[in-house]
Length: 239
Image (tube, rainbow, N blue to C red; front, side, top):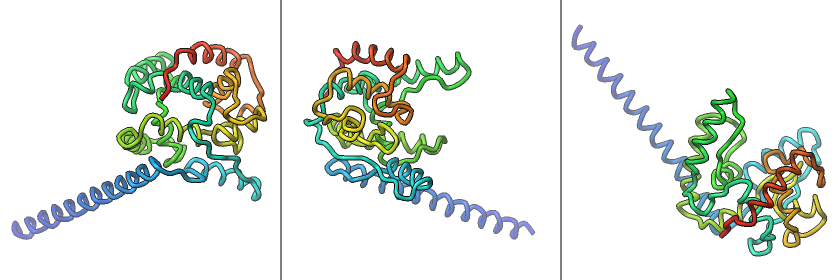
């Protein structure tokens, strides 16, 4: 009887070890796949991203002929006013942190605890890029964990200039509108290189909810945000 119980325990232990080993190998394999993708993006670009694919699928569920507006534009051809405005609005310490703004995270947590709900976020441009390029908009601890790992890979393999270049080219700026070039032409009828400080600040102001603002539409809230961003953009540091 004791021998039978011992063999059962040994079998259960081996089964546990094999299962754990399989999970570890699967996890490592997934992270290596993401790392290869990050290395690719550090030198090349794609006509689409994970978030763009998700949005296109949602649009085609309503209209099978729907398409996205997107045009890759090199960093040097994007208005400096938009670059400064986006950094000022989304990630003021972009050049100083290594992917995570811990001071902003502490401040956001404090605000959320005071209000009893999520009223503030602290995602950096690098974190948002990780989500836009590789992940879905699903909210879960597993996705946040994967986002953190990809963010670390991005910061370890890309320059700040490349990170900002990719972010500006794949950010959502309206219903089916992605990237600075498509945004500038859709909302203002100009190339991204010709954006004025006010136009750049407006585009930065709508980033949290871009599909709510069509073709230059504004609200009192957005006007206030634009004024704040214009003030901060004057001293914003960009790569």
